[in-house]
Image 1 (tube, one colour):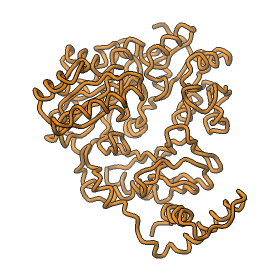
Image 2 (image 1 turned 180 degrees about the vertical axis):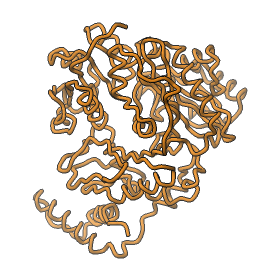
Image 3 (image 1 turned 90 degrees about the horizontal axis):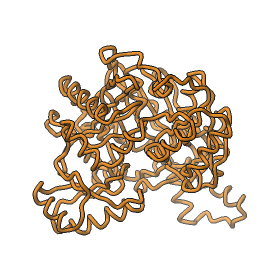
Image 4 (image 1 turned 135 degrees about the vertical axis):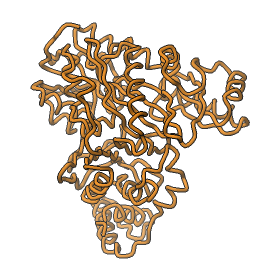
Length: 507
């Protein structure tokens, strides 16, 4: 790769990651161009960009995922590079090739590396050849039910069925009993087809009571590959991460170093360039680990790595894409302190985490020393119904884990979101759990029983005045909409109680 200085970057994404990349561009002295759907016309990332182009209606399949429109927006606004963020087209090798064919710089790994790691089965095959430990299971998609039964019996139950082209917990099914295998395979394939237009599914051994630990890697085009240590992402709900921290509370220095070396070897095996993440399962003995997959993009949880290493990963992506060598070596990198991230979603934890998009009547982010909020919303704006319901990521640093968690709890209590329920009460409940506080958790920690016990709807108590105020607000909204008053309407009371429960000020 030859050096090609960048001047203007199209950010092919939305929400908080688009805001994050735009800020990185501006700090690097570059202009940033936003794309947006009709539903995002007033979004924060549009307001922050130097220019913005509408790429279609609300549905992402008609806007953010339309390659031709994204490329045309870049060309029409004089961009020389495209940053895909995460999600949407970020791990689409075909899109990466189209960007290069259009004469633009792709701020990400080479398409061949995306291809190699994009299919989990192909990645498992490649990394086995590179002597990277992988979870026992298949390296090819399952052909039929007979094959599934035979392989599952060979590796032993429980097993996990996983979508070969998947991610985000989609197309995954745990199977404990052979009698349940056929139904689980049918369901996994159906979900994989709907989510990824690919119903290929493979099977691997379920490593019980494991932790999900990932290693951040960074590589330039001159042969240097480094790791920026680990993130523990074991607090998950429905196979999706909701809380991350670094360092991991259980990782010994020698295991951390071994995982880092394996991650660098995996990246080198596919000619990786840019920022990427190797995900591992850490066995319950906290010593044995197995490669899961590689995410060929910036991760949602990248800020906590930035907080403990001092490396701005977005600016590093921009410099590497321009052909610059990394300005540090592995020996220059250290972890300082402890950082945690809470993914604040527009979800109602008292109603099974039902999505709750809508207008933000009030919004105030917490402040204070070592508190960072990566958000994509503002007061008076809206969390649209069409996309992922993330409001923001609360990122907090402390000198040690206890200080980081205490500071995060304070920041969560200072967070003000009025108009929609959020997942903030869930995090406060999590932080009160003594096992979590002691670092004793794994990927199955958030059981249905745990959620039911810690997120039971409490009695109104002293919140009655606030509930009355909430009902008045709902009645106002109904009146403005021309509806007849319905003070005794059960649904209005229920909404009022939920609102009060979310927005009361903790003692």
